[in-house]
Length: 298
Ligand code: ADP
Ligand code: MG
Image (tube, rainbow, N blue to C red; front, side, top):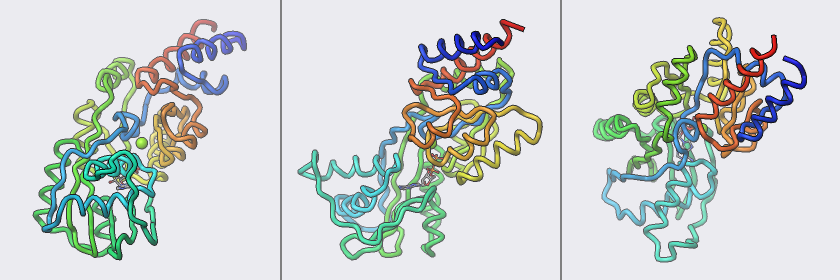
């Protein structure tokens, strides 16, 4: 394609909310035959909601949420925001609650948070965070988790003073049209994969809903990048679509990194293409635009 055609291509992209950072990105997009999708905030809306609380110990729900909100209010994670939002419902000062002070706050990327609130040790996060802290998970608790994951929801475990005290079920539905996008990509001979930091149960349930059969779960940021490189090693031209800090190594490693516009600044910086409207359909818009630009003039 001529430099003018590339300029026109990027211009058309911009007018449709697909920000293409340079000619190389536009060129690479038409060769893509494999797309790795992040889950939370990419395939899903990214505005998770607490839909259920399963208490394992005798405790007042309001007090339970006081403790975890005080810890989670220090985290930027979408799941943390969902938990704090939900906890507000138990307060009279719902609009502007002041949470208890959290001491020794720790955020463990891809796992959860720890803090001391009202002299109690609070741990909120996934199964491995609980197990890594030496807290046992009973068979009953495991059954509840499996049930939650089967519904494509995320189970967040809460430990208070080293006892598993409750499990929150958090739901983050698929973006409208997600299933259709995956099916259109398939018809374009582009293979879709799911790579997520979330657990295997939830990941498999979401993958099934959206029509993806290749899943990697419990992936750390470097695992996501590693997956991209592995696919490239097998001869595929790989695009990565993600929104989080944890996606940025994979966005950089991919032949084409595509960031969701509503995502974090770090992901947007790491990407070659930014989907400003945060629509999954624009993954197809970007590839179409590249195909048109690079097959029109030969
Ligand atoms: P994803 O790849 O789906 O965006 P992350 O890598 O950010 O997910 O997180 C992986 C998992 O770690 C989450 O599904 C959740 O179980 C747990 N987690 C991470 N941060 C938090 C937090 N602030 N509070 C509770 N759980 C968390
Ligand atoms: Mg994400």
